[in-house]
Image (cartoon, rainbow, N blue to C red; front, side, top):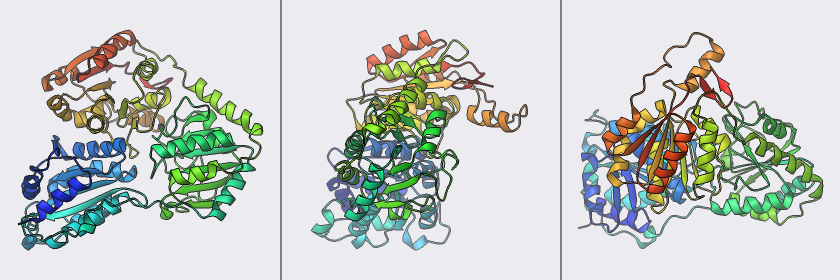
Length: 545
């Protein structure tokens, strides 16, 4: 007899899901039982569901395939919501399988019962409950399709525990095939309009990154930008959309933006937005470009038509796959490229000057710390971070070399760096990961050091400790000077905590100590935590309290 759980396990195997992140629960024991017999399948038991969802989100971004999360009802799902929100704001495809109470107890406020559909449609892309075991293949296929289509995102799937043990019958062969992401290209007349606008531009600018991005899109962007002589700015935490050493790369838009880059965006006469949504972080609170209409002519390319014109009104709206559309634009007549050489060259010069390491107060210089990591690690190394002012040094002084190298939460979620490094490590077992975290950020998911130690993952965790919630303190001092409250926190001896979990650890006081310790830790290939004690008055690059 094929139980519904057996059908689900078979589909996951055929569709290429060979790893899931989660916390086991009694509500989906039948599914875990069915997965036990799938050769090569790994269930990575994390220490909290939020971390599991973040690890799965990072794994999806590192592999280019949908991530898989498994949690139990009620508290399991609500814990996971932090990572689900990361996936939603980051347009990352996730399938979230949730064990539910038995169907006969629905809407009785049963033990740990939660309205999965109502909850999921608020925090994710969509949600569904599979109540009929004979339709489990159909509805799982639908869920995977939803996760990858249009603007990708997390789709929640409720699995009542009694349904999983019932006979499901034969699965139609058609449902065994892997759902394919629809990929479109704009009509020839729209492409011609966009190409003509770009060819006639004297100061074109490209904002790249976001939904539907993949390595092919990076190659297409490089071809297009080179042919048209257009500087490229990366959308918020999408700095790996183009090799940062490429002469067309001009820097990142978002927190800590180069003031000269911001002025360049404002002075552009045509802006091509490729894949990005132009959200609040990318547009500096909608002040860099003021909606709904912007001064420069806007060409907006996005795979989901619902995003086109939702906030900004484009002159040309291109619904299409970023890679295919950029490839089509790259062969068009670029116009007078020579006239743009100065424009592009100045943008590159500004970027190189802005990213040269600076000096702050104190013995530990974060700009030089990040610059050393950037110069030391190979391009395939995953660099992860959560939220906090420490990440501004990373945004400014690290040079990303290939797509998939930067894993940071578009939602600005604290705690992301450590579990994201776990997801990245499982995605590419032969490469290493470096996780950056502030002390407040690290303490939200530090329990996952146990997961790193258990699997001996080749991760270097760098905890930047200033014993405060630095970003919020900075905002307090700006808006309510001298009236800080709730932002001063006592940090533990993080190195000792790491050793308690089974990791090697080093406390770092100076830049020289960091260089020596990091080189040894990275070279060893073993998990290691570096606890960096930063001057408490340093709050941002070149800024102090």
